[in-house]
Image (cartoon, rainbow, N blue to C red; front, side, top):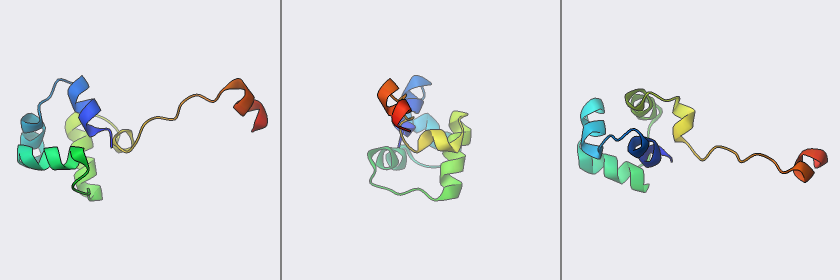
Length: 73
């Protein structure tokens, strides 16, 4: 998940994010560390609090294909 990266880029603390979605800072930490799984509604609430699309939280964006990979496709 990319929650930590996005949150830090926005200069939002774990406590502030937690306050926005009704969770304690410790729970945000567990989510960011991968110790907690997210329900779809919770994913959407975090995305809304960070003003991003929920898919942006799921994984790294794909890297651009190299020219040889594009030709092979």
